[in-house]
Image (cartoon, rainbow, N blue to C red; front, side, top):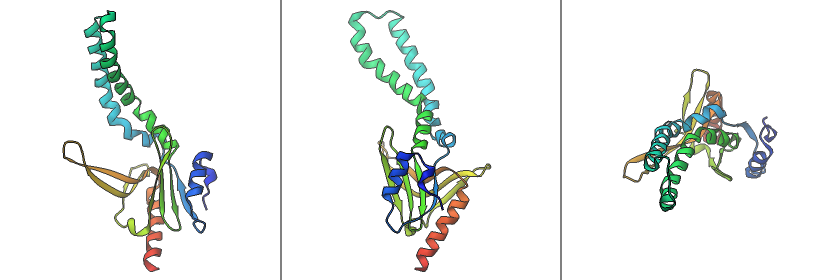
Length: 191
């Protein structure tokens, strides 16, 4: 049976405090950092032309010379655009950092997701067996993949629909984990 000693100590403490007294861990895992970082790839790719355009605009505006009269407007306008570009370019590294601070667990009662925040803290999601009937699995040729437990739809700023997947993302052997969840849902249905 897996135990929390497989996790970094700070994350293990969070997992341990979330468990009920009669709850046992059946499976415990973390995202594969390199695979999880791919989720930051669209932002990274968008960040390349964004940052290039911002740097070019900055150079063209100042032509290498920036007098004191234009310094304040320059700082107020240009620096935020450069910072946004840097954040986008670093998004895969942020995602790798988040993966190392994220944990997934299947217990004898439920599935748990401990998602790391961007800077600190965790969002903890719990799925009872009856909430995992509509799950889906995405498996890559190397055996790694995602086990999606829930998809939530929301409206974005221009009125279009946007979906967010919740589940065990970028894990090893999602088929095996899905089997454990199937056993859990079967046991719940039989009870």
